Length: 242
Image 1 (cartoon, rainbow, N blue to C red):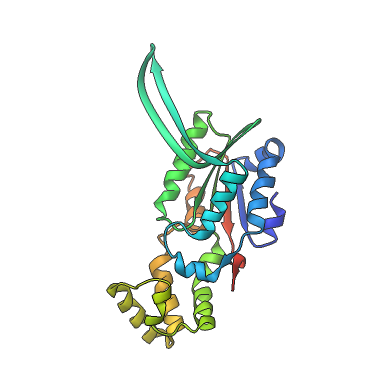
Image 2 (image 1 turned 180 degrees about the horizontal axis):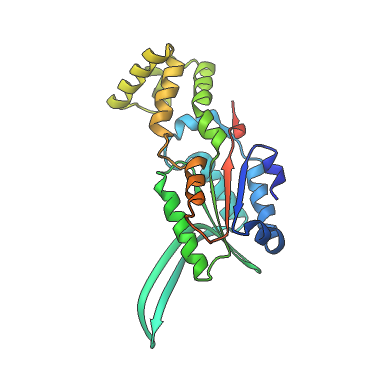
């Protein structure tokens, strides 16, 4: 399952019978997700320009999923009715949902949010699955190799493009006074502007408290989201281009 993207370095983890559900009940979902992810590329400049929030890569993936393949945003509303009276109403919004003949697939993309968003997504999947609303939940995030390799990628980009001063960062963003101090301290410690800036930039924008593979893996290993069938996909550093 997902062999084509695995060969390109993507991490794929299926839990709680998700692989069987996808293979036998939703093979089209595998084909569509793989078709979207197989050819994605992330210019290194976008790592710099889109350091926080939803980057351009995420927007491209969302556009293809929603507009081309029909994985659209959907709000699930679950109501508790007792003797004809509504006692409770809960809604869960998921960014990408696809209704197949054999079941419903819910998908979230967490590129660079705060890591508690994983708890929100997994708990939503758990509740929706328990209520019989979805068959499987999936999360796409930054893979381990991309998260661990971002400093080297940023440094390489800085060296390639001749970024050698805080002033030269103006074409991408305007560092705050706090960020300037962090960069200056890191440059002194690392011995070059490229290395120091990469260290400070990544610590500030892609830190450990953001959404990436290890944070997601830790949660599912602890049972968060259990027993909802889950598919987790990590985007590798190999998608970055120069």
